[in-house]
Amino acid sequence: MMFTHRTRAGAAALAAFAILAAALPAGAAALPAGAAALPAGAAALPAGAAARPAGGDPLGRFSRQSPAWHSCVRGPEDAPGKELEAVGGRCAEVTVPLDYARPGGRTLTVAVARVPATDTAHRAGTLVVNEGGPADPVIENLTARRAAMKDVGARYDLVGVDPRFTGRNTSLDCGWTTASYFRWAGTDRAGFDRMAAFERDLATRCREQAGDLLPYASTRNAARDMDLVRGVLGERRISYLGISYGTYLGEVYTAMFPGRTDRVVLDGVHEPGRLAPWPIHGTEQAHDDALRDWADRAAAHHGTYGLGGTADAVLATVARIQTAAVERPLTVGTYRLDQHVVPLLLLASLGDDTARGDAYVAGMVRTLRQAAGTGRAEPDELLAELLPELLTAKGSPYGSTQTAYLCADTPGPRDVEVFRRAVERSRARHPLFGPLLNDVTPCAFWTPSRERPTVVDNDVPALLLNATGDPRVPYATARAMRARWHSSRLVIVEGSFRHGVYGAYGNACVDDTVNAYLADGRLPGADRTCVVVPEK
Image (cartoon, rainbow, N blue to C red; front, side):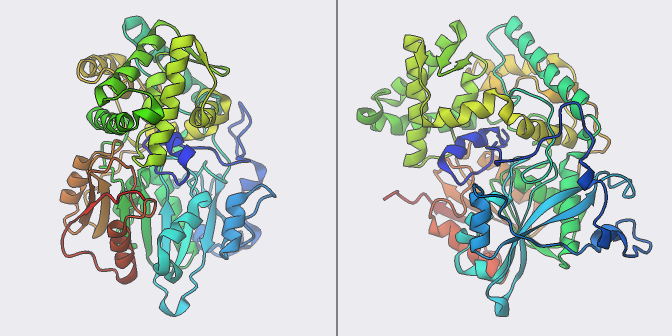
């Protein structure tokens, strides 16, 4: 819920966990409970790399690696791997230090995929992609990004790096029974205290089961890994495309490694300093607006959805669902959805204002309404995908890793009363989303980070993209980043409530602007306003 932009309809709501986000890739390996040690296979550099002289460079033995490229297909059910294979993609593992302050110590590997340029006569370099999260896998969506680039895609080596502990890498698993720590604070002090205890337990589980890894799951280390991969690939500079949280990773990378980027595109722009430990704190109004925008369209299709003939009537339906959940948990399939979870599901569903997205939200609301009215309902398509991630151990590696990144990146309040006051201040104006977005987080109980937060005070000529109604990163955030980076240009999509706008919605104004910049490296002469393309 830093919320990530996803390329599949159902996963668009799972992106609520990206910051809040995402479905776990099939077969992601988890560390055994209680065993934070890395697997033996990740304990040392490949023999060939270790044998090379490093000179005086403490990272020399890492940067001089020669990747052993191999098939990306991990088994008969690996659809993303097969898609990569079909376009010539190859995969490798690059060894990196667990702790960059001690490069002679323990190591781990990060998975890398590369789709080589086919127009080699006009090759523009290497474009590294990050899909968001934090902790979203990158490799599984790489071919979709290549398709969005159209002809200019043939001029780039397209590279995906799964950040440490995510995707195809060995995962960090705290043994949670949830993919997200986000919970609604409740209606009273007792409810707030229950949620504070819940968050404390999540932090305790991480400390007990993965404590020696937690300090090394951070955006700064992901940026260091990305730069090491740059060197291993033999590139002096890389171009970069970051979506959602990936925009923050790009900002941190350019601050830590100035002069090592060429063309930079940030889609759904996060402003440094606002990311953690309340990753979408301050977006209550934006989410209220997105919910009302959906309600307007749902009312216009009352004959199909049956949720109310006006936006106010649809919103009243939503309010009655939450009121019912306060009185007693709603039973959906085998799951019990209480007052602390229902607002999260509603917030998770926002961020895609297409007809497809509207239908997903409407289906979920209809299911919740039935459960509120009759006491029980079977999950619709969206909830059937979302609930196992949110309310079972299946989502633990994702939620554990994402939280580790957030808590390491930015120190936050450690006094639960700070959160309590924020909840109460927000409740009157934002009764549904205020107590959710201001509640206690595990970071209040986390071991303090060993590193100071990254200060992003540079100026990068980048192309920034944002929808004016983006609920995850409000338009004002993109404007603030545009003011910070004077050399950048901002492309907005007026009247859109989408999170992530490039390459997913067929908006020629956006896509052509990005692709022209990637083709020739020239930013538009001025900021640009695009409009929503009507669906056919």
